[in-house]
Amino acid sequence: MKKKTYSSLENALRILDLFTMEKSEYSIREISDQLGIAYSTAHRLVKNLEDEGFIVKDSILNSYRLSVSILSLSSVVTAHTKLISNSTYLLKKLSSQFKATVQIGVMHREHVYYINKTDYEHLIMGYVTYIERKVPLHYTSAGKILLSQLSEEEIIHYSEQYLLTATAFSNIEDFLDELKHVKTNGYAISADEHYQDFITVAAPLKNTSGHIIAAIELIYPNDAKLLRTIEQRAKEFKKVCEKIRLNS
Amino acid sequence: MNETYSIHTIKNAMNILKLFTKENPEWKLSEISKQLHLNISTTKRLLVTLEDYGYILRDSQSKRYRLGYMFLHLSEIITTTMEIRKEARPVLEELVQKLDEAVHLGVLEGTDIAYLDKIESKHPIRLNSHIGKRNPSYCTACGKIMLAYQKEEKREKLVKKIEENGIVRYGQNTVASAHELITQLKEIQKQGFAICIDEFYQGISIGAPVYDYTNDVIAAISVTGRSNRITKEDIPYFTQEVIRAAKKLSKMLGYFN
Image 1 (cartoon, chains in turn yellow, cyan):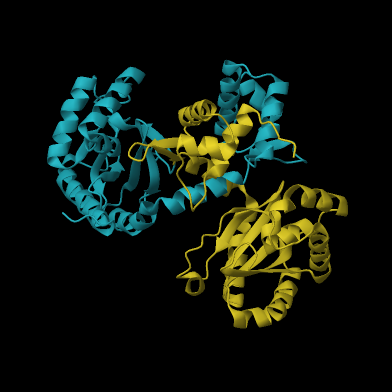
Image 2 (image 1 turned 45 degrees about the vertical axis):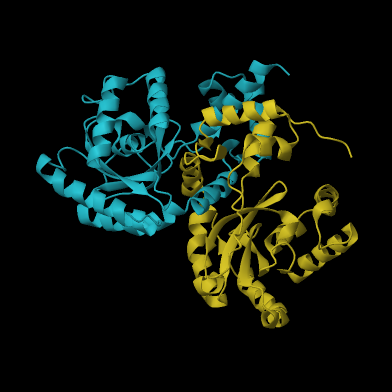
């Protein structure tokens, strides 16, 4: 396989990309291993990011974590993304109607970003798995909805680039088939794929001019009984979502 | 690759991100390039990379840039993994109800204090603090608490660094020297709270330490208000309530002492 070379800025951004809910601290050694860059390079990039206030060193553990300063930038995003403020009421309504945690996802490059969420407390309680805000498109049902809107060419391009890591699809053809179904059905279901603890159901969300701008996703704890009736629930959910026009 | 060139690249890219604020959430390519004294092609190249990684979005109609969804992802990691924020919320809410002045939860980042959370009073006033904001530690109550309760070796290092970076007189009572700062920090550690009057612009802030189960001070709680709202006579009561809140939170975090 051809090895991609990254610029310094790209490597700096790849460092920020390493942090997750499960692993929120990294040593320089770990960073250099994970990114396949020299220790000295990792060290220099980490210092740059630290100087700029994006990461901080934990003096006790001698490792680095994301800086609290990032919260001020995320608050700018929250304050100025209409889709976030305009979807809060809708998500609450859907959450109580479908008795699920509900989130709204938008696509950027090869990821779905979940920009707003309403928890359905009783169901999620006791589950330790965190739901990340940024997930590769083919991992989740919202991602599949968004992918299915792309042209066939774009879908094939995506599959060739990113599907190698997928476990659920033995080959690209299976995946393309599933996306075709998703598009005809108007909903997507994921169970036991990348979030083993959850069953998710997603449908497209349109804006006031009728364009699909996002996907809405229901999240349930994985449960055999629910799994048997999930198709029916997905159809109901799709019907509800079809009627919605959200101002963005 | 040329070393200085790449350092500037990262610095310039991060400076682009920092341009975006609640007041100025959208920027044009030409405005960014002008503001940061970068030529258009350099600016464009940085923006393309930042957009690829989700830090920037470009509105195809208005041709303006805004911050990308990647920040939501990163902030979720910060707020979820820093559990203290979740634990502290009810304690801060109770404190703001009692005192009706803005309360903060601060942690140390480098030599700065960074606000992990803030709750406004019912009469919000313009303070130089918001969630995620970094302020100098040597002239804020949360900051002084965090400095005072470091292990001696670490504290010396921090004070030395503060001195090297230069102590700025933000208010009429800001400490003038590292020596004065150390004397104050020792006093703060002895008494268990910090009071700053007109040290960071005008106003009074009172802070107390939050411990966790390891017996380390991991954060500080403070209340801040203008001098015309918190009078000298109020100080003992405010101090007592801030200490009480900090103790309550410490207990929730597993501190027994």
